[in-house]
Amino acid sequence: MHIGIDLDNTVLDATSAYLHCYNKVSGLELTHEDVDDFYLYRLYGWDKTKRDEVYDSFGHDIHWNSVPFPMAVEVLQELFKQHQITIVTARPQQFQNVTMAWLEKYQIDYHHILLVEDKLQACMHYGVDVLIDDAPHYAEELAAAQKPVILFDQPYNLSIANDYVYRAMNWLEVKKQIDHLASRCK
Ligand SMILES: [Mg+2]
Image (cartoon, rainbow, N blue to C red; front, side, top):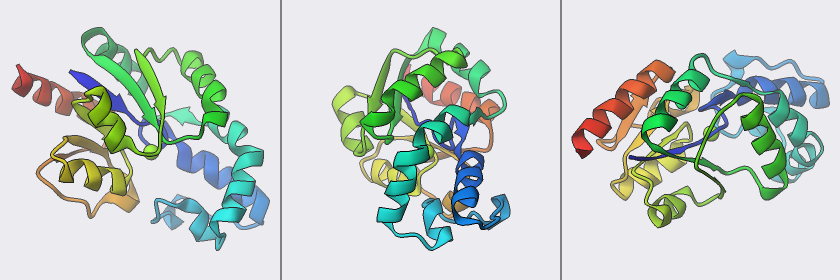
């Protein structure tokens, strides 16, 4: 199978890294319990311009200091042996180098990497069979196009339900869902 894999809040804990940075910039002290919005900056009362300004200055550190979720690296190493792996992240091009260096740091192998905002179009174009992601809007877009998604549980995506959306609470569950889909593909 050809598997597309998101990074932020799917492979790695981006929320912790963003909270750390945004708290420092704002002087607020938000915690994981406060996070119920995919767009974390809105919890700080910021608009997109303010968010972009902060991201431009601190994005490199946020991405470099993020830590993989438990078992993510081990499962990805397993999947790489049997499947085609494409990293599909909406991070902007300016963070491609730090993203690739981070993947190398944690010894995460992949065949291709795409930095794109339109993940549906990219998955269609490159023939990705299933996308692993946490974002509610991507899950809805892909499901509407009958592309399977493994949705990595996050507080802001729990209401998404669709026949094409499979859920995983952790990386062992991701592996199970992939094995299940792969057996159906044969
Ligand atoms: Mg994500």
